[in-house]
Image 1 (cartoon, rainbow, N blue to C red):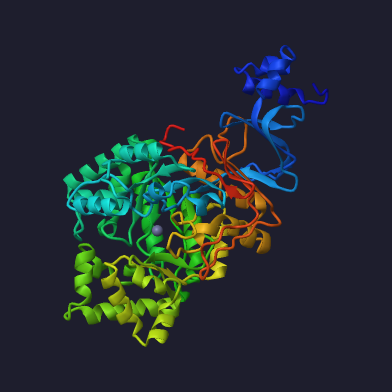
Image 2 (image 1 turned 60 degrees about the vertical axis):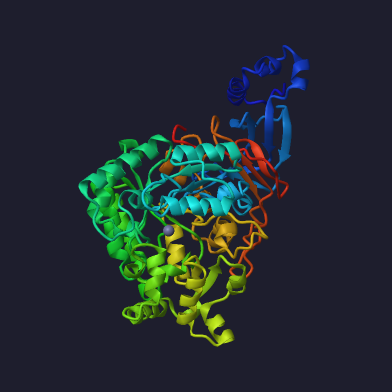
Length: 563
Ligand SMILES: [Zn+2]
C-alpha cells in the first residue's frame, strides 16, 4: 500500500468497495483475491474533474463500481478492471437533456446516437404538453393506427407505466425521465375542440396526471401553441397543476406565445405556477422575430422578479438562433382547431382561405422572409428533395408561390411537415444561455446518419456547441458554470438526487471531453455530423461511447421518480 495514500479517501474507498471482499484485500489479508477481482470496475485518472456543481475543476481520480461513483480522490494503487488515462481531458457528469423529444423514437432507435455522441446520458421526454400516454378518447384509434404503421406491431401500452415497461424490455442507451403532457390529457378528456373544460373534465385530467406521476413521471408539461393544449385557459391550467402531488409540481411550459406576446405569455406562466403552487420551467425561452428581440432582456427581468418574490423559476434553451417546429404552426391557431383533417380542409375553403393566407404572410414577414423558413422534414420520399431548402429557394427554383407551395406540401404530406425558422438573434441567445437559471437542452429527438431525416443541428450538436461556441469562444460564462447548466441544475429541477454531480455514491453517468477540440459539426445544410472531441461517455458505469465510437451497450434506465 502506498504510504502517501490519503487516509480519509482510503477509508471512504474501502467502505465503498466493501462487501465484495475488497476491503479485506486492500488491507492485505488476501492478496491473491485482489488479482482475481479488481476493486473497481473503472478508474479514470489524470483528468480534470469539473463536478457539475459550478466548482472549479480539480485533478482527482474517479473510481466506479457497479454503476456508481465510489471514490473521488487520489487512489494511485487501486486496482480496476479498466483504467483510463484522461490526461488532457475534462471529466464531467453526463449531460441531462431536460427538454427532449425522443419519446417514441427510442423504440426505433434505442441507441439515440445523435444524443449519446454529444454526451447526453439522461433525456427528459413528454414535453410541450405531449406525452406518449395515457391513450384514450376519440383520438385513440388514430394513434393506435399510427403506431402500427410506424412500428409494425400493435401498441402494447395504454399508460405511462406500460410505456416505461416497454422501454425497459427493449433497452435504451440513456436514462429516460418523462413528464406527463397536459395537452395529451386534454385530448383524452375533452378532445380537440376549442372550449373550456368542464369541472368534471378537469377532475378527470387531474386524476390522470396524478396517476401518471405515480407511475413515474416527474412533472407536467404544456404546449400552449399546439392543439389541443392551447384551448386550456390560464385558470384551467392553474387548477390542474394544483392537483399534482405536492412533491411533483414541476410545471414545464412551451408558452402560449414566443413572439409578439412573449411578455404576456411569461406573465401567464408565472401566474399558473404561482396559483398552482408549482416550480416553473420555461421551455426553450426565446424572443422570436426581429421586432421582438429587445423583449428578451425584459423577459429575463420578469423572471428574476418572480424568483425574488419566492417562485422557483428556470428556463431551458438550445444554443441556436433557429427554432424547429411543424410547418402547420405558421398557420393561425383557429385554422388548426379540430385536428389535421379539419385544418387541411380549411386551407382550400374559399370562404376563409384568404384570411388564412394573410395571417401566414404576416407571420413570415415577422420572421423576415420566406428565406427564414426551411423545410426540415417530410413523410413521403418524393418530397425529400425539399428538405434543407428554404421556401424562398424552392419558390425561385421551381417557379411557384411560396405560400401556395406550402399549402400543397401540407396537403400532400397529410400535415406532417417540419420546418426550421430563423427567428432569433445571437445577442438574445447569449443573454438567455448566460442567465443564472438557464439550462441547456436540445428540444430535439434522436437521429442517426442515414435515417432519411433532415434534423435541426441541435439534435447532434447542442451540448458541444454550448461549450465550444458559447463558452470557449464567446465566453458568456465560465466552463464550470456552463457544465452546471447541463448537469446539476437540471438534476436539481427534476429531483434526480443521485445524478448531475460527480460525487461518491452518485450514479456513474460520465463524459470525458477535450476542451480544446470539442466542437459541434452539425449544420443546417449538413446536419448528420457527430461532434468532435468527446471520446468517452458512460451511462450507469457502462461505456456508451468508447474511444469516440458508440458501443452497442444499452445501460440506460427509466428513472421513475424514486431516485
Ligand atoms: Zn416546444
